[in-house]
Image (cartoon, rainbow, N blue to C red):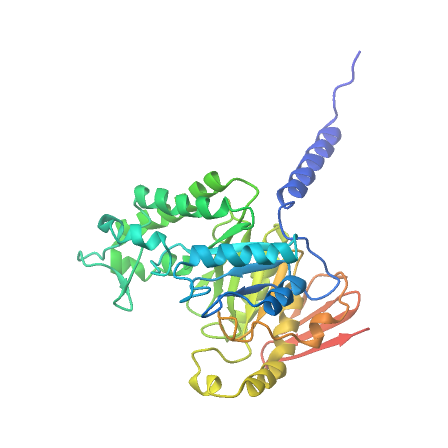
Length: 382
């Protein structure tokens, strides 16, 4: 007589299948290591493509790169061409680097060849509840995500660019602009709800077209006093950006703690998390931008420890830090700090929270952060 499987046996089989599926699921991610601080790049270069020196630096210091809109502009008229060109260069220098194509999910940027077709499709242009075109800054058209023909076009553009063997993923930007509850007054509740569903459909439809071995990154997690947006799109996505840690509308201790906790929670589900922090300044600060490059670098050095310690407090496998003052290459993207080269090692515990004090231990570093007073300490053991 054959003995049937026990409940324990079935449970073990299920656990094995889940673990196997997870290992297969993240096999197309960039290879991750705790040896040193995991750093990502996200930029567009103004004027031309990367120089040989710049490309070598990027390819040797990270394996996760997002190339932004207007990369190479105006020498390259279309972002599709410039992103493809530098993706090829980076891949040649580092075959393991993952290069992600920036493709805004809500705003019509004119530096894309795809923009030319969008210009001819007036029924794809989003309108307000009063029938006027919804324009950002009174000039930039917004996408009507509730329109299935538009979504088919958008996902086709993503598919076409990701068919390039050197491009590994697509960056969905501006999702927080789409989901903002304030849009209900602008579009009307019915239209607002249709657009929210359209956004979910766009992600799903894009995944179906590009396949399961390409990376979908979306922006992202936002923790502010008025509104928290966490991992709101877990289906069909691989990576999330936390864009404004400690700056803009995320300066409060509550916002910063929430951002770190969201990174920790999303990371534990297996997601890639890109943690974008700022040196207490941004490109919008005219006084800061008027300073010399040496002064900007010194200011950034002074603020690095808090940004880095906060990141390390909640970082999980597949978490990456970005630290600079903008989205262009010349805005601190190529600055490198001695702390990034120190041995880090695997985390020995989870983040410990005591009020606004955060602590955590790694094999080669111990982290202490005071979010209330914006103080921090990293004790490096090597």
